[in-house]
Image (cartoon, rainbow, N blue to C red; front, side, top):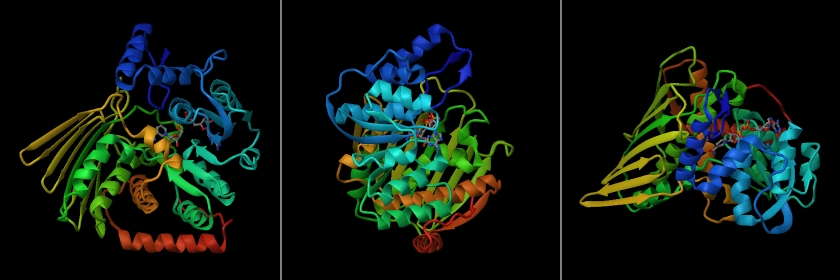
Length: 404
Ligand SMILES: NC(=O)c1ccc[n+]([C@@H]2O[C@H](COP(=O)([O-])OP(=O)(O)OC[C@H]3O[C@@H](n4cnc5c(N)ncnc54)[C@H](O)[C@@H]3O)[C@@H](O)[C@H]2O)c1
């Protein structure tokens, strides 16, 4: 049995040493050697190994949740751009915090989230723990007026979203979300073309996603963690909201879902949207076998005179009338680097977009858990309900009620 070097999951499937080496070379050809090696180190975390030299700076960045993504992506890009400004790490599994802290040279491994949050030197907090814990950690940090980067999803219930939005309103800190695809070069380039069209038109978008095979007992699959809908599909739901916002949002979205196997509704499914603006969107998430090079995505977008193809965020082609432009991206650019740097950049995306994509993902997550096949999402109604949640959270910020 071997440990597959994958984007975010450990899969114990039979794998020979030669396959592991082939995978390392394939990852290097996709992401460059530094990132490929870092992804492999994130899996094994040898005690003797330390990150390559990084300038030591005054520490101000802390992290909660020290798993694969924190190690292979968040700390990798922070070290690249900020040097070693790592303050404190916390994880409910102390070994995870110890190994991440040792490798990246964190000044401290915290015994509790409160110890980490109460450190006066903390200015920027990254949250990369399990999904259900993102909101409570973000709220605690916002109450201390910190700058917070929460990995996706930002909330897994409507009540969490209301409490989080209320905390954003009341804080002088800031909150950023780890939805990375809007920050990829392919989407930024496509966005420039879409925004240059000054006639409102309809979108036709198709996503085919070959996802990781995730075992049924992986924590991503738990309903209270938001299931695979928040774990994976949320990325393309969020990207669709981001693309719609380049024009403006429709009033309603009619959602249809086809399940390959209703016993496993959050995997191998097709979700379609049609809207009052005559948009047409299809998303297929399929994971019949483990993709050797990690998750792969084929995206096609048609808008007014634009036809665009994104091939796994390694290539973008845009046709517009007689014009054809092609871009290749090495390393593959899914937007992680720029998304992780949001706390240090201007011109980040509008927070309302992320609230809207979370509302839509919550709606679809509920449909999937109930095995429903069709429903209408009304943007106005959802915003009114969110406002009521925010109002409630402002009156009673410590209320806890169930609404999964
Ligand atoms: N943007 C992306 O493309 C992308 C890719 C992969 C993962 N992610 C996100 O990153 C986050 C982490 O995913 P991962 O793949 O690293 O998972 P992981 O299982 O490797 O790591 C999660 C870590 O969180 C710790 N943890 C669990 N509950 C905790 C709690 N209550 N408090 C503190 N620590 C806790 C676990 O012990 C573990 O070390 C998730 O939100 C995931 O959705 C994002």
